[in-house]
Image (cartoon, rainbow, N blue to C red):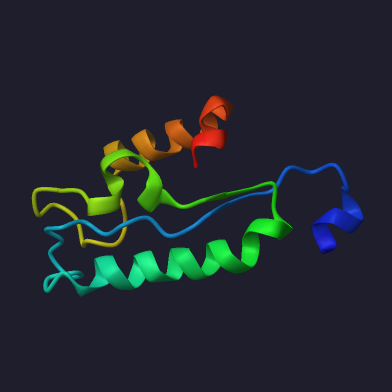
Length: 100
């Protein structure tokens, strides 16, 4: 509400937490994090969608819904550079907004 008070024409894009790596070195070793983060995205989508211009559920973008492999070079939660860049390129392309 504060953002709209200060700049009523702002476009607000909320990005839910992305899926974890399937082979993280610290997190998601048992695979349970994939389902819990997906559930959080669904909850956020339910309550935030009408308050923002766009809610991006990264689980609904391409192959990210099944997680990704970082070849055991990441902790499993913090998305490595190449994967993050790929995901954000998708977000920045306005033609994809209707697909989300």
